[in-house]
Length: 326
Image 1 (cartoon, one colour):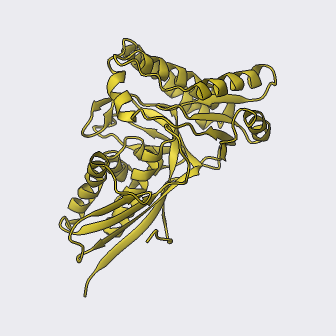
Image 2 (cartoon, rainbow, N blue to C red):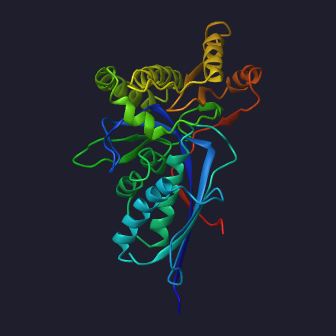
Image 3 (cartoon, rainbow, N blue to C red):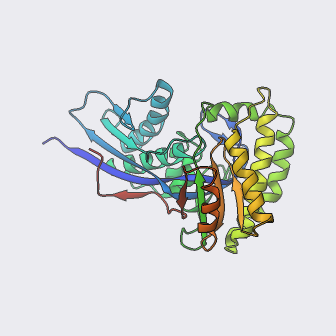
């Protein structure tokens, strides 16, 4: 009897609150410092993994297309590690992954994609693996996947007792945050920005600055303080992009639309007295953090600039789901 092992998982893309930048080990995707993020419920990725002894090779499709060689290698870094743990290293897989139809750079879909891939693969292979250990595996595909896997408000430890993994700090429903998302496209690759960041003269000062902002963000999350979370994420955004723009390549990830949104957020805060703070990862897409009560007013004002807007609550950890992609 031919044995078929199949599972599907859903994970949510992340918004970096205290972002990571640069890798001290690119192969293992080990960061220089801890980082904190929140999952975005409006940005889910669903991945289905099917292992079958009749398959002669691995077949991978992302949004219906074959991945590039680099993307394929990252997928197999995760899958091969879990195959080895299961003792089924020769078993081939069919893998399908799909993101929502949202075009934008810096939305964190690599985080949700690899989180969903790792969880679905582990379940399909019937591995009994806990979240911290699995987060170290999905990190091999994308560092932020460790946080997408772990939960809503999560921290990724650069090195804790010799391990680099993520754990949840607060659940999705515990903090009344609402985020307006403005997706903006870009051709600049995230890995390029990470590689160049360490060449900035501001990179070492950033590491020193992180020693203060990380505990402040953890404290804000523990207090469920939306205003402080938003304010600190905006502060960290400006610090991150200062480093990015001063590397050897001088990468400018912001677009004119990014800056227009950022200026409008500042105006809403000062003139309209609305609680709103911008946040950008390594891309031009803008997250605007606000409260549930103010979200409608913030969205209405931003829609005067662009109609391409999503609204999101925090999303929970990666989950196994019953509905398969194939």
